[in-house]
Image (cartoon, rainbow, N blue to C red; front, side):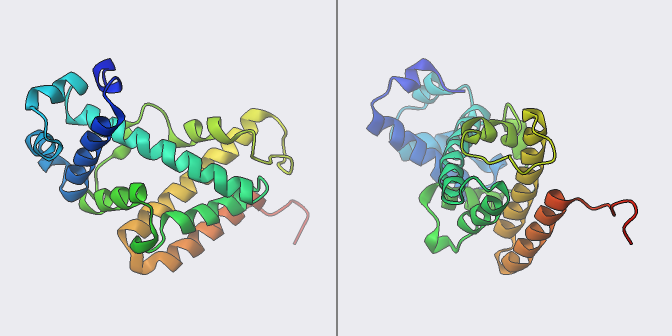
Length: 206
């Protein structure tokens, strides 16, 4: 990730650098992202880049961490507004994350642009842990798991990771094909129903 030198930068200079990095990553394919362009946009010497990050993979991992922290805060707000309902929160979060671009906040707008320019790039390889695990670490106190079949924390964690996988897949599809957003929302709702109630018949019932 970033160096201590980067963390010690004044907020304005650090933000200017990150904005320059996002402008480059959101406007080109990952393979075409240029460190020269980033430093030019940021108005710093090329050598300064390597005092902050080891390379563009390292920088991109840092930017993804920014997105994940932003999504975590958004999810906390959605979950709190839904009284801890982890199922309804998925639909509401989908609505926020896949809104029309004019309604998106700057962080998500940049993320959407990157995704559309980089179909096929495996973002997971830049993340140290699964998104569902890290996200749950920040919202466990707000989530209501009381209605689940088992009360063990690990059971709730597994259910939550399934929910996040469904949400992540639906959001990615909707970002890539916004014209099919309604269809992807319906598919997400169907997946949530299956996770909530199961897919097997109860023995003895017709």
